[in-house]
Length: 125
Image 1 (tube, rainbow, N blue to C red):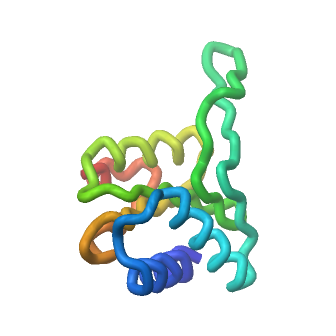
Image 2 (image 1 turned 30 degrees about the vertical axis):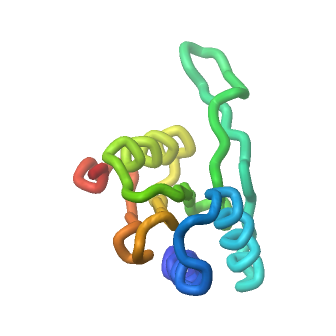
């Protein structure tokens, strides 16, 4: 599933390059994944449970594939360490094992793709 997502992201970046809004890449990636037969949810609201209370205003997952793979999209010149920490936090809140951080703003897609595993602190940078 992650391999399919990376392939779809690469093809989008190869065809369109950097410079579009994150929301454009999100629509295109979600459509590409669905065309490959995967279940895709865009901007899925995620609640936060804290101190015995539930807060529905937690965050929105950019793309959730098959309910198992979180994809966080960026469209910036280069990724920062905070982007890796953001997706790691999302993975913890969702209790998911794996996420992909995809930056479509770089010159090449390869420099903008990061695989982040829940609990793997070495993947934060």
